[in-house]
Length: 109
Length: 121
Image (cartoon, rainbow over all chains, first blue to last red; front, side):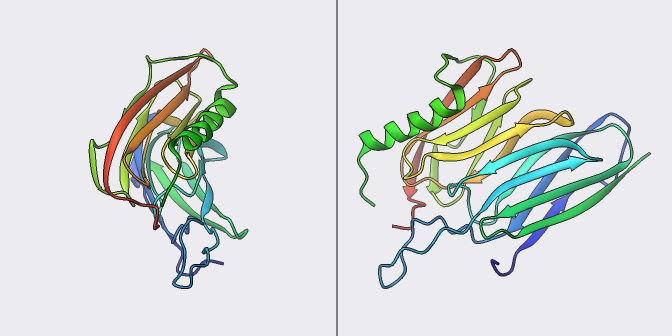
């Protein structure tokens, strides 16, 4: 498991039903590309987050596949429709099999 | 890092062909926003937008592994757009390809000049 992994997501707390909101997400992760070499000239093995998904009340908003060309601390900004009150579930999948997730609730009003 | 441009471009074409199935690509219906000059290739902000698209593929044609990311938009996507930060090994073309609502493909590309490569070589 990569160390110091911390997901951070910015979601408005409230929205009107049917609103389109902007979501910013960032997860601290070194995203080792598998191209770099250490001081001895050995290749540092690849260790990245390879998939990021967002769901709202079980319905998909975004499903993103990531390759090593995504920068350290992957940042993604996108828009989502909020049809009703509920929860956004953000999930990140690590190369090493770890899964990180976080949930944000949105109220209508 | 020394790379042969020819083989790199062939790899990028492979990645694109896997996504499109070899279909022809138009140029309407997709926008790619990337800086003209990136001082640091380790983190280059890019934005893609293709109204109505079900998926957008992002490719860095000059990277050792050209694939960057694929965005698949679900029914609750507020718009078919997203922005992220990517690594570029050097000056090159960044390409975005969208699978549009009617099943056709559209392509946009943008040349980014990179001062310091993000390849760690």
